[in-house]
Image (tube, rainbow, N blue to C red; front, side, top):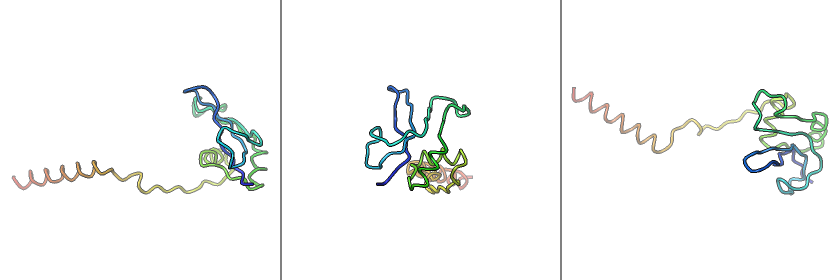
Length: 118
């Protein structure tokens, strides 16, 4: 059975609240889970201690049993110091889009024409 440590959404419309749960990876996001491991409330300020609460002892147990945390939960565990910080690489994030490239080329061409005219 492939286990995941993931977020299960609760709360009402536009008021999200998440439970951190250990669940079978085949179950739906908000469906059946094996154990509740903590909570996450994104509406609270980032420096609030109540924003993320985790039962570290049980999380360590599930990680030792082979459960894989999702990306968001892995980031929370990295912030808590449970997991080593993973290198994430998104080389395309900083590159401009197609329209921005075209605008830059047009601007460069105009400036080149202006310097040639002088």
